[in-house]
Image (cartoon, rainbow, N blue to C red; front, side):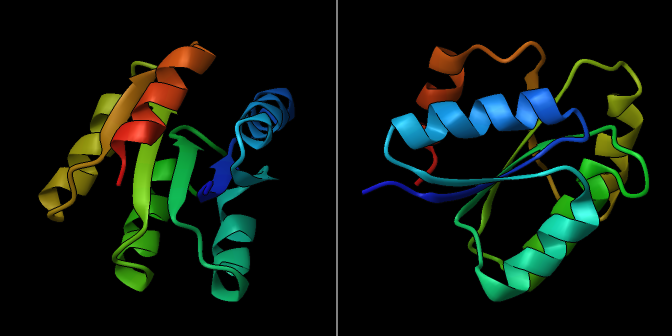
Length: 120
């Protein structure tokens, strides 16, 4: 059975495309275009997996991931980015005791699906 997955990216085309791919593979996937909306929806329908861009306006993917991990400790998190500024944000998370996995953009569907299969 598929996982309940939230895809969070301010680039709508990326979020929507990943959701289509995930749904075709049997997952219950939803797209969110800002971190705060994903956080609010998680209170209603807690995800098993978050796939999120790191660099987003308002709240970064790392900040959202920390809040998600605090509220939903069993939720798995995969972050992705194509921006070199990501290292500083990931370091912020590490200093707070969180070590999130980072995937590089562009994300290839086969690589993403393999990562999801590895996340138990």
